Length: 176
Image (cartoon, rainbow, N blue to C red; front, side, top):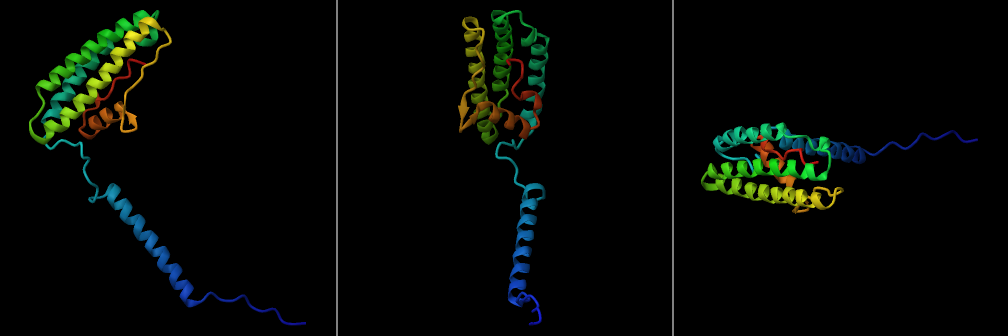
C-alpha cells in the first residue's frame, strides 16, 4: 500500500497571476464608479449652460399642467368623443405653452438645444392631436408616440427636462 500523496500546490506564478487579475478587476470597477458617481462624471450634453431658460420654462410648464389638471380626467370621460374634446383642450394649452417657450428661447448653443427640444415637443403634440382625431372615429384608439433614434420621442423630452431640472416640462400623463 502506498502512502497518499499531497495535492499539488499551485505554483507561485499562478498565484501571482490570479492576484494581479483580481487587482485589475477591482481597479476597473473603481474607475467605472468614479466616472459614474464621482467628480469624473461628465455633464449631460443636453444640460444648458445658463439656467435662466430652465427656470422660466419650469414656471410656464407648471401653469400649463395646472390648467390641464383642472380638466376632466381621461379615465372619467363618458365616451371617446368626450375624451377627444378634453384632449383638444389640453393640446391647446400645450400649444400655447410651446409658443411661450419659443418666445423665450435663448441664443447660442443653449438656443440650439432648446430648439431641438421644442421640435420634439411639437412632434409629440402632433401625436396627441392625431390621437384625439382617431378617438372620434375609434373608441379603442391608442396614443401612438413617434419614434426617435429607436426610442419614443417622449424619452428625449423627459431626459432634457430632467437634465435641466424642469420636471413640469416632462410629458404629461393625461392622454392615457
